[in-house]
Length: 113
Length: 111
View 1 (cartoon, helix red, strand yellow):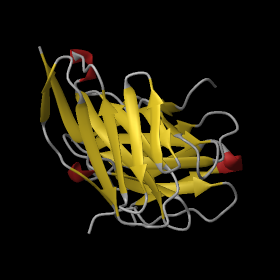
View 2 (cartoon, helix red, strand yellow; view 1 turned 30 degrees about the vertical axis):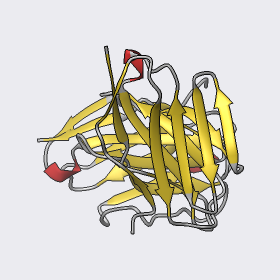
View 3 (tube, chains in turn red, blue; view 1 turned 30 degrees about the horizontal axis):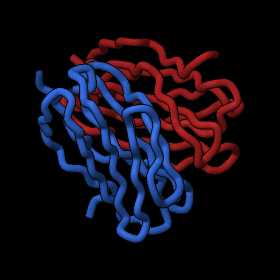
View 4 (spheres, chains in turn red, orange; view 1 turned 180 degrees about the horizontal axis):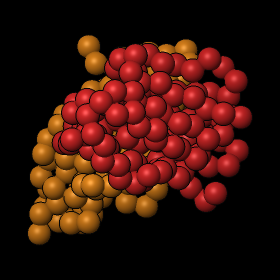
């Protein structure tokens, strides 16, 4: 596609439910990143995929969070047993390689009620 | 020490003035540096990338990099009200080139 696509744009879920957020990177981009941005805060790194290398999961805040990237393209971020503090905008970005510029999707606004 | 540090601001400049935004980073081995602009409620938008020491100009924007001082800056000439946004500095850090962001500097361009 022309840009990074994220779905859904908005998600409201009940506390304790599981959610899946999807990211479709720019075609051919080998690197994919997930960040979280709480209201009025900076970007919090979650996870980074680079080609076939093992992902850098050092930013995942708890074992309720996981992500996978199938076939080196689409990525899914899964949050299990959601909590109110998980409410944030989840941003995905992709880049051509591990050194090039990264481009962001429009984000998924997650609200846990 | 944070990996990427920015002054949170707000930085207020009058219309037409030069806005100067600064960023320091801790990983001396970092090779790639980026500035993003983020409007309220929107996702970050890439403005500039810089990889070598010195200045890089693109229109009204100039990025400056000093690897010895571990310092990168963004100058915005002829600032416009539409430049009012949060500016994020990003640096590739660590052996795996993870992209790490500063907390951002809020810029306000006043009429």
